[in-house]
Length: 53
Length: 391
Image (cartoon, rainbow over all chains, first blue to last red; front, side, top):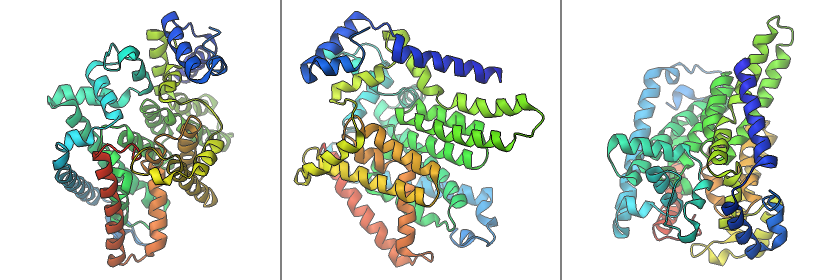
């Protein structure tokens, strides 16, 4: 049971980081935002959530 | 084998013995070997088997297997960024086998995929035998090895590993071995993102088991039996997310990077409808046809609906999810995602069973094999020629 709870805790943390808390590196963010904005406009870029991080 | 497993109620002893299963596995391996020989013969004008089979994503898997997710100058300014879309278990297996065998990564990948295909055929046989009223091994062998898109199951793609692991997880769950099902689901989620769709199946089964055991005295053990398979099932995906977070700071990089292929999130049913409405079947076998990809997905969804009507909820969920999840970001590769899905192959088996009847006249079996084989050769030659539509 301990192992199961530990794993579930780890997974919830990663999920939280993935969706809400990631600190994305500036180069990576710049690359994606640029690519997204060029192809689909600012709205699509903002929809990924990367612009606000 | 057919007689030994004929109808429900009759003894199944012979097929259940290890000796018969071993013979079946040898037949499967021999059939896959013959199939590879036929592929090689057809590939002669295209530079040989290994080169002809390695198209599109094969190159990504090969480079990840050889150089990892690190620097890669092969895609110009994008460097190694596209690598993140490809999940690690298959390239890791290819890399390990490549080191051990000393063969080229492409050949190693093909041999591994073929081995995984053999695993899928045997696991699928065991699954069909316990879940269908009538099981005919020869028909299953024909469906698994001759279905038009099944050449992907011998290519340097994740299809064979994904199909074998997910089929294994469903079989383990059916045999009331939830922890094994969870471990196999965890490996599936490290192979492809849609592997995560096995987790809700395991959750549902474990919740049912929890309800059934509600009067047990050992509550802690009951809770552990419930939670451990659930916790293990998505572990592959979460470990990959952790790896991406620690290396580039984005745990969802595998999803974000899909933009490079023009994929963005949207309504999957709307996309399928738009795809069919575009009616660009004339592009088939030349470039990508949206109508063809969407139609293939709809056939898969119809199969899932049929399974649901037959009260095969887990199979229906997994097949529908494996179609709708990728369809929500685009129509590319949908025929491959549908046709190499083990549950879709089970549906094809069921439908073939209906068509040829329970007695399965040899002439009808041969006719089915001929039709499927001819279609596969057509697609395979298009694949060798680099037709994007097949992909």
